[in-house]
Length: 373
Image (tube, rainbow, N blue to C red):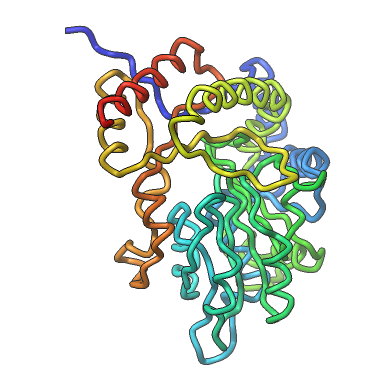
């Protein structure tokens, strides 16, 4: 029996090997592998320029980016006797909420908009308590939250805002980087992301003083050979990670162009059959994901099964809605998030996905939809 070669939901983008090897040769020559090396400094400068941001800090991964942001902004090192809370969304990757819980901050979920799938600002104020310290919205699949409404609420109630922007690399809103909103915005540079460093992440701070505090935190709080000024952790990006990032950044426009072609082909083929995410107005998208929502969970399950039987791996992402995750100890139903999560599916999208494979995927989905009608 022949083995079907599976089409994955995504593939890491692997840049030019010769260029990567040259960076590695330089690392060997300098024998400097970590602790703010030459390549980390170069990648910091180039990313800040490319993204149109200031106060950018590279870290070891996207989860640490969130945790360092909470600490640097004083959200998770609250000196009061009460447990601090942060209002966030249940429709996201587990790290958004687990990073809060891990750092002693109680995640308080509010429901999402049924069309954009981002946190609905109309639900935020009712969830604010005397213990609320922050709002942690997510730019879901790179779609912009209602940043003006969220920032206005935060200002009114003296709350910090940390945007989980893990999916929003290169996304612009009203002509400028989406990462410039909030007190901080965090990025994930995991291998499966549009831009990656193998593993890695970054934080963009609004204020330079927060950046400077975070710089100390990611190196154990050490500021000199015999000086420890801050309670810290090891969250530094290595030179090997930075080398990969520099190579991927060199080819980012080629990667973006290929993804945009795939994304638009999917859109044309499936927009009349399935619900697509409503993008925020004035958004320049990065084509990082292609999620679709079916009419029922039964349809999703049937589609996943049919795709897998034919060599295609799609992902129910984000599923489940996080208020149902037992270890988070939150038991307040979020009906819109739960409903969207039960019916959503992310289709394969990556640089090397062929037109033939795309046609195969869409034809399989359409066949399953016809069978359900």
